[in-house]
Length: 152
Image 1 (cartoon, rainbow, N blue to C red):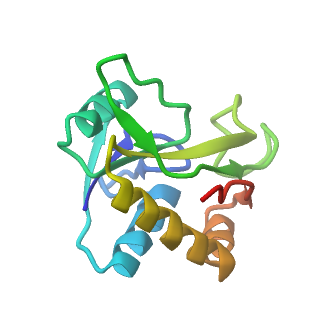
Image 2 (cartoon, helix red, strand yellow; image 1 turned 180 degrees about the horizontal axis):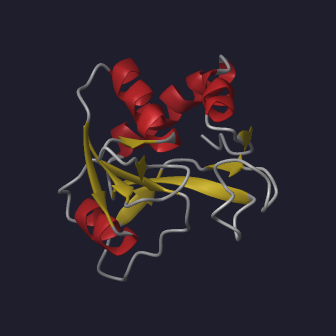
Image 3 (cartoon, rainbow, N blue to C red; image 1 turned 90 degrees about the vertical axis):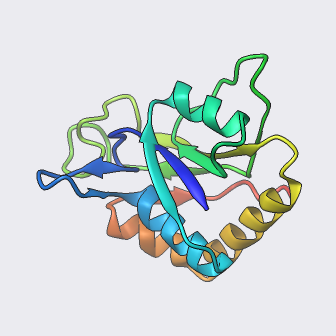
């Protein structure tokens, strides 16, 4: 599974001093790939490039914590979003440098028409939520999760 993440987007995918990238989205997609029985390959790019690459079918999915705004010529679909909530701005935690975000939606985009992938992603994420994996992952990254999607 080829997945693009936004470049240096706290708390999703942030490089450390050694060049290793870690974060909530990395851990999330590694677990999704494991449960789907596929190998994962990450690519990092801007939101605009991410949406374009997914719409052209060059990537299987893209993830970020923004509302992706596809251009008219970019056909993409969305897996069901959920919300990350960090500590209030100014408190210690992953959101301290991201003053505008106390509650942010997590979006996963996929190529338009990839209905089987959308269904599988939603099923896998629903299972991860039901068994508490997403909450444990959020705690690991000093976040909380608000789940109010599952509109399958």
